[in-house]
Amino acid sequence: MPPIEFVTESQAGIAAGAINAIIIATLPFLGGFILLFIIRKRSELVLKVFIGTAFLIAGFAIFTIIFASILQIILIQIEGDTIFTIAMVLSLILNIVFIYAILREHVSQKAKNVAAVIYGGGIGTLLGITLPLWTALIAVALISAYDIYSVRSGPLKKIVKVSQEEKVSLPGLSYVSKDWEIGLGDLGIYSMLVSLALDQFNLIASIASIIGIVIGSLLTLQLLKKRELLPGLPITTLLGAIPIVIFMIFYY
Image (cartoon, rainbow, N blue to C red; front, side, top):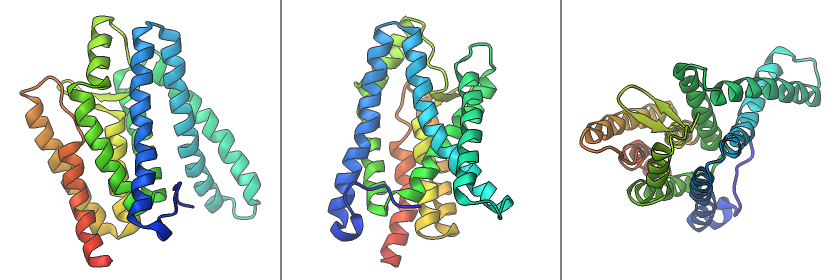
């Protein structure tokens, strides 16, 4: 797949990566403020449309790529354009089913959690194999820094407070367990690091990144016992990115 970059990293190096990363990091920044604005307006319909549209765009890209890859293996004799059309139709159907499950209140939390893992993991994997190395690493650093701000005094803290006060549900935006809750964006970043390590280096780097992410998640959960709200990215992404940096040193 062609890389996602606004400035070519192969020509401008780390400077291009920084520019690309800043542009990418503005997406969660803007998304957080837009979501907070909608919640404050107390419009459940607009909130569902916003969340549904976000899932539709992300899911359509994810499922289309997955179906196209599978169909290319199964339907060898069919032309590529036809396969891509079939993949888009199947993607749209599956996407509608998932979005329905996410937005409907009577659907179980387990089903919503499955959808969160698929969407978060899928978009993270897609970014991990399409973003250039420096762009991805700097973007992770910037988004992790923003996560600290957002949880302490930014949009996320206000979103949690307002949604609790107004009893507003935020379907599909997190994985919810009995004792803790993790945002969809966090799942995406974890998946992105693992995919980046595998795509740029090898399976060993990817496994090492997974181990770092697991350790970071466990440490974060321990700290969460002392606080009601805690950023899920900084510790976890730092430990997950260390193997990638080490491989960068030896590979480049």
